Length: 212
Image (cartoon, rainbow, N blue to C red):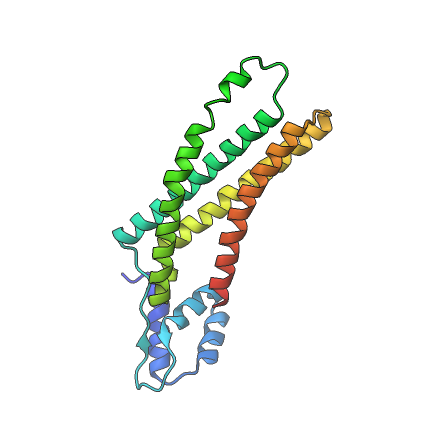
């Protein structure tokens, strides 16, 4: 039994085959109650041209290889970002030590080693895989529509926007309590800067992709 999407694609194909113009097909489907996004997707599945029958365009597919590359890329991005924030927090704690923390001086002597090592190991892997994927996309733009890529990108946007909201909430809460210190303000700025940079990068990438 054909799904709703398959029925829509079959209708579009037959309409194009009979010589109907795309605006006419879009108008008829809109009048029938089909969402604009589904109509656009179905019409974009066939190439414009003078060929006697509708020519289907290649559809994005999910392969184990693509899933592996994108999972590793985003995992190393998250890992690098978390450890970068941890390292910068450690610098803030060293610059503005807590007077009540007697063990802080000795504790912070080695706490920066792990996040530094993590960044040195993970971030180059992220850059390498991101560059490799971008080269493949330039060679085959259809790869931009990879489902795993879009899902993980939107997941990244969701995670970063949650961090930014939580960061802002924490700041407002401390302002209302009158509990603001230089240490706290710097840590809020660091968390917002890292999460905001990641959000803006992938948000702009999606906007550019949708425009193209």
